[in-house]
Image (cartoon, rainbow, N blue to C red):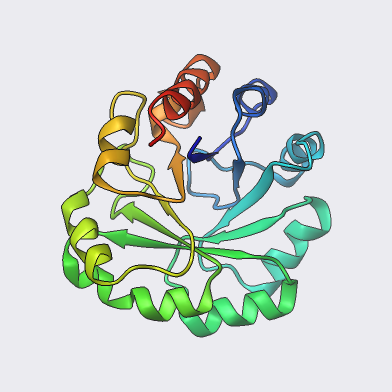
Length: 211
């Protein structure tokens, strides 16, 4: 099975669906403007019953050290996901300060956006390729990434994100060979509201269509 990350979990029902469905990663969003934002008390509870073999990922946007430390003091996280304008240097600082693996999201709309990949790959533990409007349910042109990876194979593992749904998993895995898939809006009944049935269906499809 291709690894799957269910991102933006806010409720016990959604977390349970992700765990029982076989997600390898579960994501908690600590960016307040997001409709998927979760407060520390809720995040602490949700993270507390995640099995040890599932990675608990905290999503941040341009966080300062104080924000990260405050969050980590309350919420047991296994990985930090950076979804802002963090530089390779800032990624290195965060890794040194908090001793956790870092996922760096890179927003893609055209091939020029991939120019920054080498620097980020050198600094981060994982990369994530997402649409410019992350969390909107929109995808990006996978052929742009496909052509880049054909010429520049990555040494680090990476997520494919942006507009993934139960219906297009097969096409995504045929076009690319990501280490893992990241889904958020594709398993929601409305913006910011995870649907346990959709989570189950997505994870089943990822198993069925795994290449």
